[in-house]
Image 1 (cartoon, helix red, strand yellow):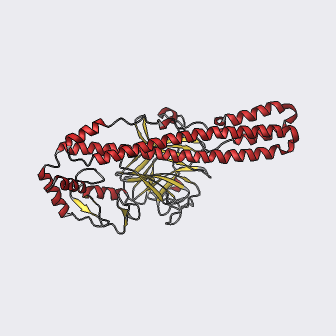
Image 2: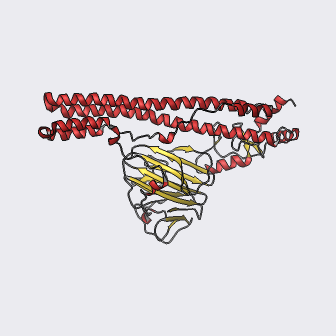
Image 3: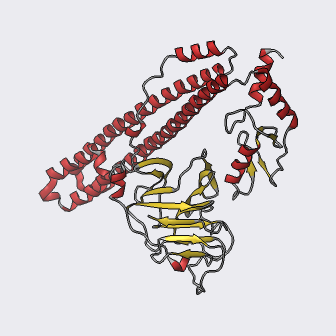
Length: 454
């Protein structure tokens, strides 16, 4: 067997889930192959979805395919092991390259997300600036010559400030896009390098690669609530009522409001565990909403799936009848932080409107399957986010405590992995909430699964 041919075979027996040589290889209907244990764990992690899918090409299968060992691929693995091509040092080097690629891909994904948010911010700057100009002109129309002078000044100031803000966003966007381009180039180099055959040359070239440019500190990029210049029209109305006495001061105030856009923004999001803790609210679950198979603690802060009828409970219009769900009692508006500890096989942690349906077996009831709820599904194999039947899957990660930050008026909802004082962002939502929100849980017929407000 030639070295080149052996290298091709080596690539073909690598599992794209664990990034290692396949163990008990199986081939699924789309033609891609994985370790039997890896693909089984991957599918088990999404068992509540209607269809299993291929991690690479995303082709869905119904019903779930039977997993049968690919004997030819297993034979190839054994033969390559005998040739010595799978020595420990080479495998470790390839793993290091794989980890480097994964890290770069994650950085690319993060920066692409910020680029998207910056583009949305630029659109909002234009939209709200235009709205502020239009509203201001309407308010000032009754003021004749003197007030038209103020109106003109405000308009020019808004235009000037809009350009400043747009340039700020564009500069950040361009910087991140350049960094993405560099990262993609480095990722391609690493991919090509990982296919080399000479281990010494591989390590020499890898070690000689120039360092990447200084990484942009994305934590310093504050994606602001997409609201701009609202205070201009408000101050204009006040100026009309106090025209005789406060003409000069109102003119100065309006110009200042346009210049200091941040004054019109909501407070910045917390960044440390201590700052989040200052927003903690004590919430309790509502027994009248709890499915009959769910048991609430004496304090109504812990919910356990007992998978059988608990003590007799009266029918209630707010109670979930089919899906094992429950909501808390207190409406959540403003800024709030809460931590949830969960355990077992699978628990959904949700925020939902009170108007979410309760009766029947349909998407209007299920958290995460309608426009009225946002869900973080926590499983032994990882987690994913769902809203309105759209799911975002993430790599497997172990955690049993979730932090939830909500800024209702800013339309911000964040889910965090909590470990001690360390908070890791799992998923962020930027939207417009039209109703107060309520904390909710969903369980899936696994006796002993629980969720607790801590």
